[in-house]
Every structure is written in structure tokens, then in C-alpha cells.
Length: 498
Image 1: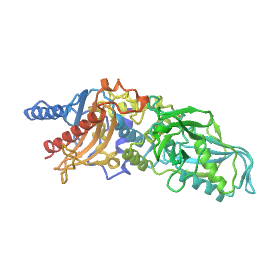
Image 2 (image 1 turned 45 degrees about the vertical axis):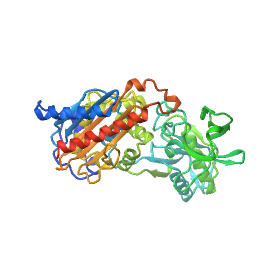
Image 3 (image 1 turned 30 degrees about the vertical axis):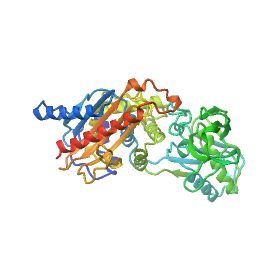
Image 4 (image 1 turned 135 degrees about the vertical axis):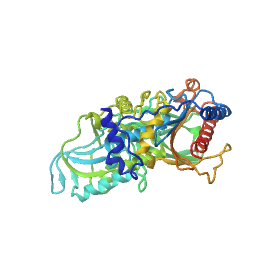
């Protein structure tokens, strides 16, 4: 099992489509680099790194590992086997998991399905909007699907209008411990629109406020009623949420509104949200639909009238890694698990499936993941496991083309212009957690894979995540952690590739 998965990950044509051919023959088994023997140079390097860590004045744990991508040799490490919260660095592993399982060219499909015949422009049966787990479906796409339905000749539907999202098991929020109003923590469903977020906008009109809730995207901004907002005469809390059955009911504190503004709020009724927006566009084409009703069982059967395809998976992952979109990570991870198991798995089971894959395919023996995005701080990865996975993937150029360029900066945060090292990496940030993992091309062209994980679990344990307030000291702690990351990378590029 391990050999089969690993060969596929590092040699399959799906990954080869991402970039140029690998620079060396990839291993047929999990890569397990050996630590270098102790030497004067290694001792001096470790002392220099400890001095940088001391200067950073970070409480908690600091672990890192840096490897040669060509040979897999461990060049330096500190607490390499210590499991720490990876935060959004998890998304880099999720990308590898999805690429290995689904392939870089995979596209998600959203369909309009007719459960009855269409004759003379009349659909005698139900129309079903069926989600296929597309994490990038937006309002513009639903508008195009409504136009395509009209072009297909449908002008009337005698049955009901149904919505189905069972390709991804419903979950009210990615992490239930997060603030209720956090837009980065929406519901999960196989039918997810605009990252399952609704835009709340307010404008002062005299002594009151004009409120809109809409599903805007690039070309359209249809109003929605499945999410409703009421201004309450209070100073705190800023938001409250109530599950009103067929809609999300919100209130906002009048004292927090000021003169006007806007923000994205999470959607907890994703199928009904998408259904309402689609029905709005269908009506603009003269196709009047009944109020959407949810389908809780298996995928709908019938004739597919319209299909919307997402961009290729590689492009979706590039956007996920650039913008660190939590819902995209969860949905592509769950899609990969469903492919592997032949059925949809809930988030917890899917995270366990990815953990098992990471251990078998990449030798990540200390990995224990709770999700695919890193939002859950109870996930654990070790620096050596993560660096080892990146080194192996680097040999096949599987991940590096998808990562963002990271600008090296000095101790005062200013860009180090003209620095010869090139860095491509994924960041991860939670309060009192800061992580960075990726690749360095050193000045002499040598390739390095690294993972830096820093966390203070004691300080995190005092946080009430439901409050949504930045805890005291978190900003300074995270800034110092990021400066340490920059200093370590700059030093590695000089020591190991100067």
C-alpha cells in the first residue's frame, strides 16, 4: 500500500502536469532521511540558530527541520519529532493529498437535473440543483446556469425545486469553537456558494440604518432572505446568531455600526442559500420556481440539463494556498477521502483518512490531523515530518509551483532587496501559533525544504475562541515568530547554499 501510493504521488502524470519534469528520480518508498553525524560545523550552526531563537524571546515551543531536496539529508533540526499545531501549513499537505487522489486536472461539477420529461418547454417533474462539492462555485456561475437552462428550452417547471448538497456531509461550522460570526468558519456542504458567505452591508440613514444582505460576486449582487439581519439597541456582543429553521437570523449591536460599512458573514443554510440565488436568476429568464426544498438522501436521479464545471484542481489549489481559504481546503480534502473510500465521509473521518495517507505515503509518523485547513489547533505535525514530505514532493515538483513567493525581510520588517535566495512557502497563523513551510533556492542553486513550527499551547489554553477578541500579547508574539522564521531562512540560505 505504501509503495503504491508513494509511486503515484511522485511519478503520476497528474502531478507532472503542474510543472517541469522532476530533477531526479523520485523514491519508490517513503523518504526517511538520516541525521548527519555530529561535526564542528553542525555544532556551530546549531549554536547560531539557538542565538536567533533566544533573540526572538518566544515562549512555548520552537521546532524546525531543513533538508536537502535532492538527497533528503537533514541539514539542521530542532525538536524535529515534536508534534505542534501546523495551522494553515496543513493546507500544503491537503494539496498533496488531493493531487494524489483526484489528479491535477480534476474538475468539480454542479448540475441541474430534471426528474421528469421536458416537452414543449415544460419540465413535468422536479428541477434539482445538485452540488458536486465545488468549493469555488459563485453567484456568476449560478447566473450562467440559469441562462443555460433557458437555452435548453425550459420555460416552466410543474414540480418542485430541490437542492442537494450530499456530496459533502453537512457541518454547521468547520470548527464549532470559533466565533459565531467568523466568515472564515462557515458551514460545509456539497452545494456551497461564495465560500458559504453572505455580504452584510449597512448605511446610516438619519437615526437608523439601511441594511442589505446579498450574494454578490463579480457581475451580480442579488439580495437574499435566507440570511436576515436586525439592528439591536446594545453595545455588546457585536453579533448574535439564531437558527430559525429555514433561515439564519442575525442581530448586530447598534453601537458597533458607526456611519456604515460591510463585512462577510458565514452561511449556515448553504443549500437554501444557493437555491434562493439560483431561483432569482431563473425568474429573470421567465422560469418561476417554487421555494427550494432540501434533499437529504442520495444524489438525485434523472436527466442532467445543465452542467457547470469548476476550474482544474491545480488552479483551485493555487488559489487556496494563496488566500488560505479554509472551506476550499476542507472540501477538496473531503472530496479526496470520498474518492478513496467510495463514499462521502464527515470531516473528522476524512481528516483521519488523510492522516493515514500521510503516514503510509510520506512516512509522516507523528501526524494527527483534525481537519484539512489547520483551523483546529488540536491537529499535530512534527517539523521533520513536514519537511520530509516537502522534500519528497519537491523532487517531483508537485507542490512548489502552487506556493506563493515569500519576500525575505530584515529585523525591522523591510524587504531585503536583491537577496539571492528564493523562497516559496505556506504560512500558518493562529493566536500564539506561527508556522511556515516550503522551499528555499539558495544562492548556489541548492534546493532546501523546510518547516518551522512555533506555538505556545499554555497561552492558547487561556483563550476563549468564541469571543473573537485578540488576546493580550498575541500580536507581539506572532510578529516575533515571523521575524525568527525570516532570520532562520536567511541564515540557512547562506550556510547551506552560499
